[in-house]
Length: 304
Image (cartoon, rainbow, N blue to C red; front, side, top):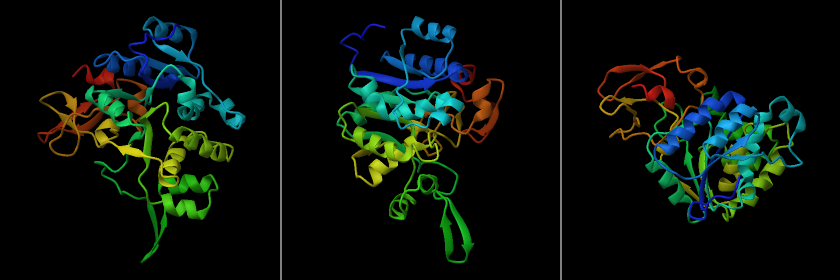
């Protein structure tokens, strides 16, 4: 594919998928195009020829994954789509013609286009633009295991994954109670200082126990919480993973926090059945106190 026009080459939205997530990627692309003409790139980690042809017909930039030498070959052989998580930390090298790079996972879609512009704006100064998982979640903010009165064991995502990576206890202690920085949506300038730091941690973590699936989020947390690289936090509407709420007046998914503004980017993490097929539904509350049964995918919400 030829290089993007100079007037649009500055910004790009990137995702990645294999053949199984192709339908979700097409929905993500459609949701972006509802709001923005920014170039879109897709990392190919197992799509077939017909799927690639459909992307090319829509003017999508198709990217080959970049796999560093230290990546666990056996894990990638079993699950080639793990390369997507590895590539997230190499996007500045993979996309030399772009300045601002916005990553959105394939199991997400854009409901409110303002979220795209706000993510780009937050990263323009060279900081990492990302959403911490401290929003409207009806869940314990910190995973713990109570041992006896007054004693507990930290069981947070970051603590468990840092332990799996055999990082020193001094590091586990510093990040264990920190909020997870969800790597499903983030934005960075190609010249941001954090890129080499992310890859420093990746080179340390990735060879250990084949941690390809979760290493991206752990590397981001380490670069922010241990190395102190600059970060700009955005509210959870920019990477919304629930609890789900429907605004009957607009037919849109709304933020649980009052005044229940529209969700910007819907992220269907942990919604396996919903992702797999549009006929799978869930029942969620509505702003006016009722209930609605729906599929929260882009394709499902378009039929409301």
